[in-house]
Image: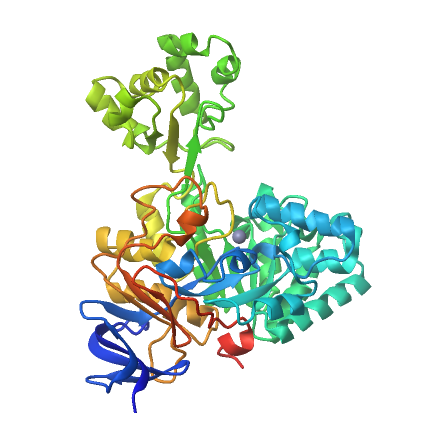
Length: 555
Ligand SMILES: [Zn+2]
């Protein structure tokens, strides 16, 4: 009898971190049934000669809640080998939908702010959380592990009061009931944005909750062996925030977002690792989501964030003779002095030298040779000081150039490597949020290409473990290992070619075209036994599971 699928002649890296070995992998239905030499024929066969055969990758942090409806193939992350995504992060999701008009609009506006403008409640063909899971079930190519999101729950239970005050005991009970129902339906945990976190979440319903409300709701998830996800990660280092004390009272696995090096707070990254390691020793199961990229920010003359706020820039930026002012060497010197003095203070980026500023797009044809070059390179080519190379190039292009600043956060590469390697770090993409600025959809292929192959941060087996067995264990998913009897979530890739695309050339925006783009080196992706990606193309099959009962170990 032929197997349903045989992946032949590859190097099997099983996700545990142990050494790879040559073998075939056979699949029947949704499960891996045999791993060994010379397995019999398959109704379908994939030739993996020269390729790695590994478990599918787990994306520990996404905002793909509305994205999966728009892109049911699981783009863009499926192209990069992801077979399971977490959704409902940061207490924000498109379900449950509040029934009252104003609270519903508050939710839509919140999602437009923290996800992006594409969110539109006209697309919501559901009301309750049950409706939403029923709607996506059977229609998605990747596994979707949903969190129960605090703000929609609060809006549904409390209406307008959700964004005006603390909840009374009856309201807390009603929210606990709703979270319990969500967990019974298949959520893998509870998520929130507590007060004091990132400014973009300020004023949202969950920020009106007391820590006691959050503890009570998270501990409902804990009863189901679920997890607790929160943002405002750095508050765990601030006892005054109350967050460390809150976390101590939560019995669920805790996942903080985002674990990053913030400008001017380099030391905090090491402190955060030490804090989590200490907490883990005390039995608190706590992790931080690491996005394996240096954060970038684009700027133009109209939004020149690295000069905004400097007195000299504020005085000249709207003046009619801005060009003349920028020709003036004294003005340039003043801007440099002010920028250096402000660097690393709140609202100002750290400064890591002019090599971190790149002329991404130049209008004038005769200047095109400087495009994609950093300012230090341009300084060498033009034989000028970097500051003059920057302003002169900008002026010669009539201030129309678009530049990129690399290093708004996660600026220190070695430290970012430590965060990625640490047993406190879970790799995530944040896909579905800020499509014009966050180009992290290739996080797994970035780990395998840039960090493993180019930077030699770790060996192939360890890199695969970081993306598979490790997050599966921490999130308690029955995934992440290539073993007989395990669900057949599999990637087949060329370890010498795999690359995230984004590192070499930033896209303009994550639009439909970027979402569909396939990185080099990914030969096939299998979800629950069905081949969803093959040779740079997504098949129209939708085998993803959407409920904890099918995705979790603990049932
Ligand atoms: Zn988030």
